[in-house]
Length: 335
Image (cartoon, rainbow, N blue to C red):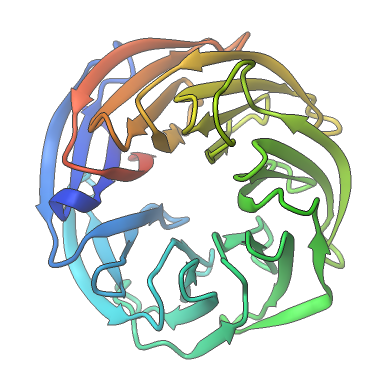
């Protein structure tokens, strides 16, 4: 029986598709289809693996689902209204608070969570975050980074134990004008941050000081393949659990970029570009870093790759139809 599951939000079908992945062979099969009252977009598995957080843009709600510890299936726990259309959702490691960033409404919102994971009404909203595209919490649970694509900056917030957040001093780090910071990831050791820039197709590496929450730019690299017609349209990035590889999707060229990561300083070296699903928006890597899944927003398919542990090379092992307009992908391996 499979213990690894892939969750895909399909906005056009108003459903979350769940697939079971055999981590020995790569065989992937449909497992569950959960129909929702709204169009799901951002997904995030909680740090303890008990919940799937879901943002529905059509209804502007934050919704939580329980994850069955035996079979990985989802059941809706509850929802709470969001003051803007959620673009990204996350959860503190204490499991006390969920957060939603809204690109369209330029805000960040905090939702208390009941002990069973059910969200309560919003308790805090920070407005004026131009095109806020993510809300990523570090390993210490003390810092949250919010890339603001419209301001070409990464905002830094301090997190309190009760889930409240306050602007750090300094409150942000600016990036190159016109780069458009979209998503970011912390390195497994919490010492570095890689930020994907949507509008110029680049990835910035920052040194992260976990004592004062400051970011210092170390490197900028392009993730774009040669000969692409049109402006860059970068989408997602993920780092392997051992910090050795970074993967990034680009929608204009429908490619997957693979980088090796120097684990001591976080610096990137391009390994290669690979064609993938059409307009690849969502992507995730499993906890073992052996399996990678990419969803094509226009192809309505999911491709599962086996990742070479020495080179990061992705080899296709399975391809399956999804619902319409797949947006985000998450992968969970049950204990």
